[in-house]
Image (cartoon, rainbow, N blue to C red; front, side, top):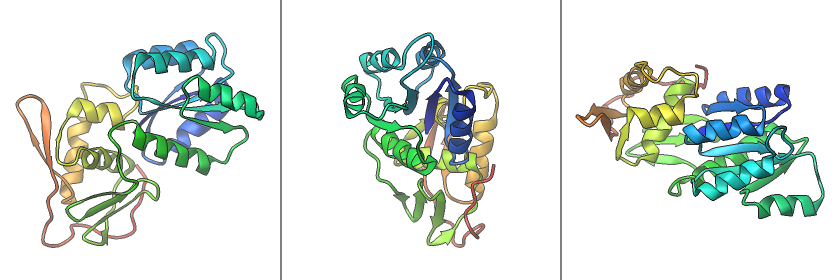
Length: 233
């Protein structure tokens, strides 16, 4: 999942971004509304965590721009304002959800996960295909009931492939959804990560002439590796 955090309080923005990255999300950060609009113009985000009170360009204007673009991006507004009328006004601009400060990070992450499922054709909370079960909330993967060890990036890539439900996913699409803007687009990191995921027997991805990947789930006779699922990179 690709997330943009827009927050002018840098410590808070960085803390949110780091926490979401630990949950296998690809996260970019903007510290004002103008930076946010620049990133939104070139990247396809599933969810934008948007502070309403931003310098340069207001959060309201950023929200209106995103909604007016017709993108599938979902917006979670953050604000210190607690009045019901202000929350209603934010939702009236087109925001999909609203969270007041201070907030519990666990609740923020859960709301982002829920919005991310709505940013594309509806996906179930737990992804399952041919014996593989991936739970984005608990960050666990099992294959035929056996726990599977995956790094954060391997987890993110597998989630995107399972969401495709056996369809074709290009390396560019995976780069867009599982890595942030600091990743070199010409790197071989996507195919390397696919190779690592395939070693576990979770996914079979065949390169296509059009640059895409034909994705199929395969089941080996015995699990390649097992143990408690981890999310360390």
